[in-house]
Image 1: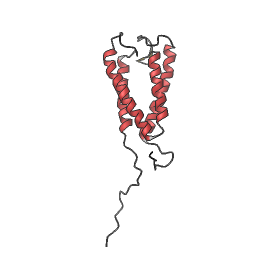
Image 2: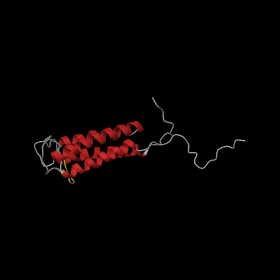
Image 3: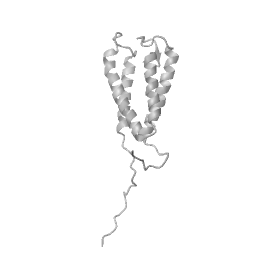
Length: 151
């Protein structure tokens, strides 16, 4: 098990991004239920939109799960990176699925519209950013210092 030498309370940017995305997705999942209620679990109905994004109860649950994962995993650098990889893979696959599902109600069980699909692509890219964000250095910088003379 590794131990961080960073001062207590210091979080990396990737961790804060994971937390913010987790909170946003949790709130979107909750708000989605005000639009859809709990019926028509996997129904394709583009009249049910949150802003311009189509939702259904199953789609809302996916948002809740993503939100809870972001909030649960942001606390450690490794956890935040894991969340980033999950976003990249999950939303990358969902984006590709959406390319086929938009306009095809027979397979569109998440009620994805074109706006959702572009948001999923953007979320996958944010996942990549979170996953590969450079780690904070735990060693002090020696920039601008001179080496001791040998002599």
